[in-house]
Length: 243
Image 1 (spheres, one colour):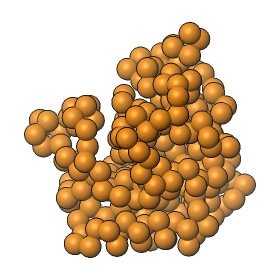
Image 2 (cartoon, rainbow, N blue to C red):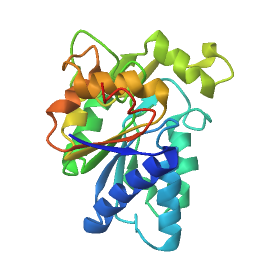
Image 3 (cartoon, rainbow, N blue to C red):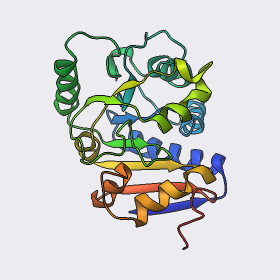
Image 4 (cartoon, rainbow, N blue to C red):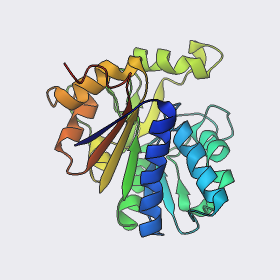
């Protein structure tokens, strides 16, 4: 596990963007695993700037998102479909048909989850997977549990995750209580993983994930077993690692 500590959020975002750019430049048809939330926003802004400068071409790239709230409309401003379009896709030259996000409304949920994993495998797997981390150590929407859940699946969100995401909604009551997420096995199949964390509120989760026991109670701790993980932290998120 390669740990990179930078001064602030802006430097974290630039470093993450440079890693994604290198992957796409070296392999123009890269398969990217993408994340949402506040943490990767700066990375997306840097990638958009690079595209507009002509430094990177996304025309042959495929992307698969980690997760989506279950039951939410795609055009809802809090859906991850909307997030990706507004913050990244519509500003670059990626083809719409090459972007994949778990279906938020579908009758045969089990089949839809299986299909999501199948289509990732069909395209050769994810070359580089971007992850954030929740304050409870979740990656994607894989919540603390008594076991690691492998494939893409429906998740019942924990109360602390719902409360943490309430800042994006008018009230906590509007936050969806379920989500569809890539599972731990799906994430661990990625050839390379980049985990981003910023702020003091993530420090304990980072310490547990990087230095703690490997346990489903801290889902991110499984990353200790992956052969190619880069963790990019600002100094506040890294503050407990020297202990």
